[in-house]
Image (cartoon, rainbow, N blue to C red; front, side, top):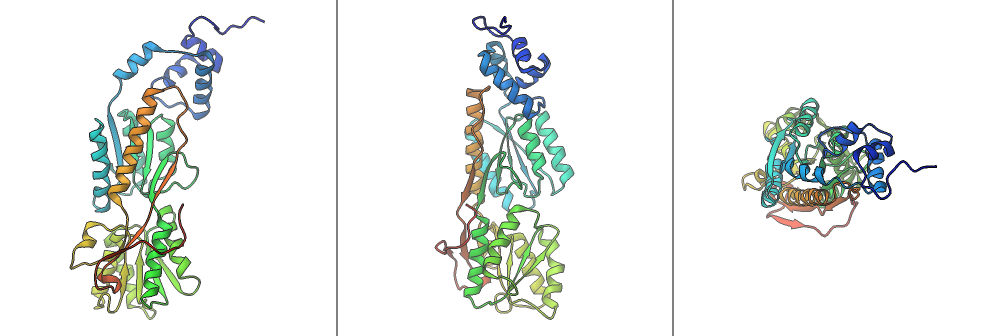
Length: 360
């Protein structure tokens, strides 16, 4: 039987389409470097055809270089949260040094706005995206990946399959370190005040807390979000009730600030009447009059590592645009406890030595 696919002559886009069993226009979309959506299954067929036929689109490669935008998108949940500017500063330092321009989008913790931002970034033909929004649904990350955009997820976890590089602090260990420190101060029971537990980072912090304060020893108060103002009234009600806790672990520093505000409304002293530990170590926590003990979230470092990985991925894709990308990896940065006055310690000190559950 005659082989209708070339063996010595240079393969054409029509040959690739015929071998893959798709239309020429679909191959053109695949070759557009992520400017159009092509399903993962179809992308794999086309990639295999290109490899089998040794397709060398030199003219396209020249055009591809002209279509490079040298832009990287960064998606955050809220620019009002002091954690994100520090993380974004780490991203910006790396990508600017590599010659890229940053496009910043804030979703305001709105799922609809997250979807709109993804649409906008794809239309802008960004070469990569750092996703830091803790509330963003995995399907939006998948849409970016399927559109051919390089993605690194920073300071958040994916619910399901690891479809993109992820850079996180060890949330389980952080929750454990904070809870164990409260226990060391003599608090036999404690309350975890957390954001929504469908957010994986909050889930892992809660698991670390429960490893210390198990059944009957710890309670959980879940809020609708992690804003400071959201925490004040529910925590004030908790502190005014008959089973007021002597210690609170807040799943973020913004929640912890809400806890401290609520304690003030109930005329409770910190740490005299209520010990508090947060999570993230935002700059406000470091102010002496606040003195919030917390888990170091390494925001700047997470942003730096995420940006470095993203730039490496973009560089690799440019060098071999038709080869399969390397598999995604998960990078976990160690969690550290920063002791300050709010937990009952007399001075600031960083603790890293305790063993406990880990997210590794």
